[in-house]
Length: 273
Image 1 (cartoon, rainbow, N blue to C red):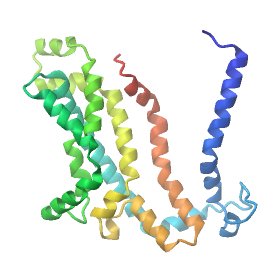
Image 2 (image 1 turned 120 degrees about the vertical axis):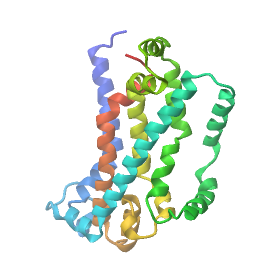
Image 3 (image 1 turned 180 degrees about the horizontal axis):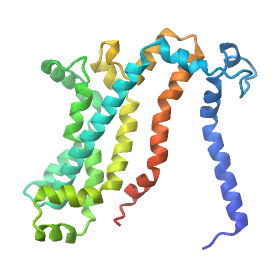
Image 4 (image 1 turned 90 degrees about the horizontal axis):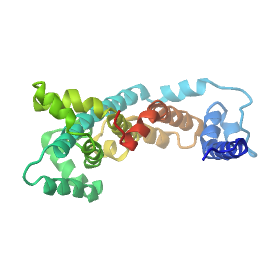
């Protein structure tokens, strides 16, 4: 049923009010980063600063080696995303398109691992990585991603279950081997799901604090999340520097979500073009 113009105006007005309400803390934090310390703690608070201090970001960034922290975060995020996309799509393809003995049992075992909290496996993983000599390196935060994630495998497997068999049968007739069918036929079809999984993984890894805290010891190995926590301990009485680094840290996930939201909707719908 087509909505009237009056109904649309009311709905969009309510949505705009709700959006402003939920974005208000972020907007206030963003404007506060340009204030002085006195203005930040002044009461009653003011939204706009008396003088825009753009140097606040540069001073906060130079207070610690945040450039190195940023590089570490990017390396971990990109590495884990590549690992998850390749391994999860390959395993999901096997579960969705092949029939073999014990497939359902293996899939149930895979899904059951989702019920095990990371807190339970944290100590065994630390002991294992210490045996490998990986403690205080980025390897414990990147390498496990190349062995897949049960949740992402489930998402891709459910998507692939809805793909008609005509695609792979046509590829077999053309002489494609199983890996070529996976790479050249199903990977393009999986594009919405790959983007969805990539965005979810990037946001999760970018904001991860506990993993780097356990496996990393030296400051030059810190990620942005861990560096921000250390920065907070040193500058606990200074509000502006902490807000500046926080704003810098949350901008990349927001931009990624904005540019990828179209594909995220496609990935959750399960549609095939």
